[in-house]
Image (cartoon, rainbow, N blue to C red; front, side):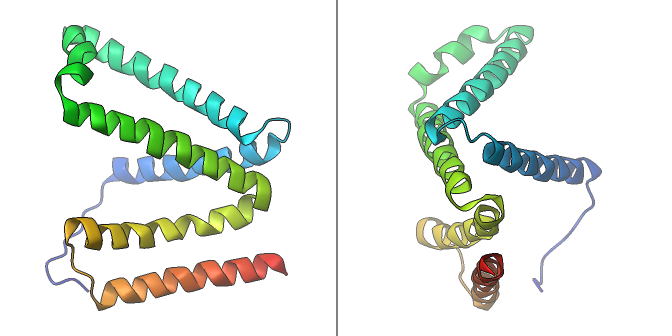
Amino acid sequence: MASNATTSLSIIGYLFLLLGVCSYALYTVFVEKAVDFTGIEATYMMLIAGALVFVTLALTEEKLNHNLTSLITLPMTDTAFLTAVLYQAIGSSVLALFVSNYAIAKVGVNRAASFIGISTVVSIIAGVLFLGEHFGGYQIIGAVIIITGVYLANMIIKI
């Protein structure tokens, strides 16, 4: 549909995409089964596990590359980096995980998962508002299809 669009097959990319989908499927199943824990407790443990894994990986990589000092001082010397880290930590991690855990606990995996497509609509709107991206017919059609799909999926789930 796009005149200048090009495609390529990246096996590694598709494997990572498959890994992401499988990870999300496991996440939703385990969150739903963790009824003994509150949303805050589940979110806290997820953040601790993620921090341990990714901080360990970052420190190891920088130690091997002899850049450990620059990594540790980076948040104090680069405000853009610090802003990005705080946004990721507070907005994309704490708030997003808490809301996701809460939604799965309250409405179930199927209904919560049906709303994943809405993130694409939000991304389109954010791109138009904040980045001045084009908003044309294909975006409108796509957004309508996504919203209709979410609505129909939730109507079917009710039945």
